View 1 (cartoon, rainbow, N blue to C red):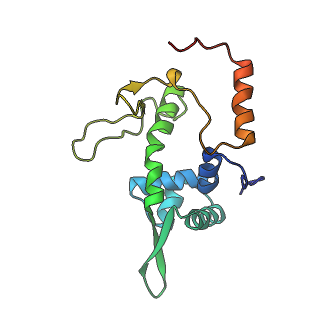
View 2: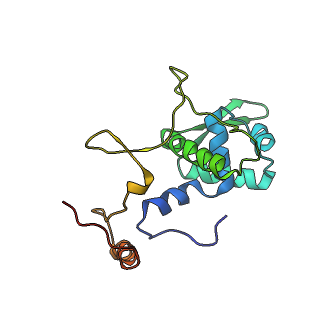
Length: 172
């Protein structure tokens, strides 16, 4: 599936990517969020090969993002469901869809997906919210900083950015 493991890397993004796996696994998660739960429907939705689909389902199950449930016996047939950990991926999907729409890479003239509040039907959109004020923050105003779990590589990564970035205005 991957040529290099992210094992040992202190990075939540690498860890999340490792749990997800790859682009096919992300599309399986998309389909599960949309309500698809059975093997043949995953195949029909994405065109993924049997070998790839089987491998990605096993990976997602092993990562704790999905669970397999038997819905028929004689022969045994299974469907898949998101776990609570797998449902967390819902926050990522509108962001990816918005990027695809903005970049014009969806293959459609208009946005093919809408994300709405289940209770009201009103459109929702991804964004950054300031935890202290509750106010929206633009992506340009977001800065990546060292967290309490940072290791030497994380600190190096962030210091590297500071060396090559324009000087920031001092705080008032």
